[in-house]
Image (cartoon, rainbow, N blue to C red):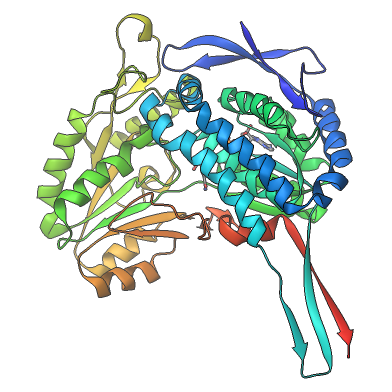
Length: 480
Ligand code: NAD
């Protein structure tokens, strides 16, 4: 069976312990490869390699770094089909989604930051003819990048691309649930000629490998994407060490639909923003708020279209939803369907596990689920479920829509559907979320700051923000 090895100091290496974890194919519920079960000592070896590589990588001409990174992006594009299939087998998502979203966005991340670093500039100003100030920015050193399982290569590259482009060297850890594309990526790094030690990928469990990265005294910046509970733990470790910290955490995003919306577009996009990637996208709109005058019509149509979604073999062209990432996660999501009923909610469609035939019979499939009849305070409407489950709530006024939208501890993203321009801006300004989409969803412009408010995160990624995060500013004041 294939072994997923660590990538340390430019080489693919066994974990020092010689131990491996099972890696599952969620669509079939079977072990299909083994993943390095690394320890603190592997992280230590990776950090040493990164420390050794830092002087030459950070001092290399930005253009030369760019050329290497662009080669890497081209290699991802070249291997699009192979990587998309690997991502689908590892994660359970439809191959066509990995092919159209995850993998193209991975190479786009690398290309964007490789070239952005060429345009990254600092300021200089004369202070009333008395002194001149100029600012320099230096790479922070060795960065730790930790990513989740839902968009594996996409979010892995989202973290490491700006770090490498800024001149940092990196110790990275992909999720132990979806390590395959990061492993294939490490092979591409070797092919692209990335110097040894510049990027090191250590596979294994969060509480061992992730924790060791966060605790390592010479890993001075931590860029993390994952759950809010893990983020809190990471902050508790990193903050007293005065590490730079970027946390991209969970969401419970409102999808606000006013009755003057473009109904067809709002409906079509809401189906996607509810159930794309099995609802396992931090930006999914899991709480749909609908103006009461449109509520009945919206619910009827939404339930009908949800019932028509095809759940099944992720490799089949017609599949809309594949498998959830793991048996444990499926059980967690199913438990929320049960909780919704306990809380007095009504499941209009879905709520159950799906058992498919043949080779997929042990896969982790679930019906897309629509729940109504709950208030905003219940756990179903407060906690991140991170699966194909949405609730729908009616509202009467704009004020009520805002109150419902802002009623959770999360503040990652929100979507607003209205043809009223003034209202669109007014509501966008009052929803406490870091990312707002008006009449669209999941559009990304990599130049814009990305991140959440409240318990959805600390700091901003994207554009210059990421290059600033991985560099430290110094001001030099010269007396004239
Ligand atoms: P998770 O927090 O369980 O794990 C994320 C990563 O952290 C994994 O690599 C894991 O191994 C590692 N980890 C676990 N414990 C650790 C520790 N003590 N120290 C260091 N690292 C540790 O999250 P997940 O289940 O993989 O991902 C789902 C979550 O990610 C959801 O909450 C989702 O909303 C969130 N997410 C957020 C964004 C965003 O941009 N805000 C994007 C995608 C996913």
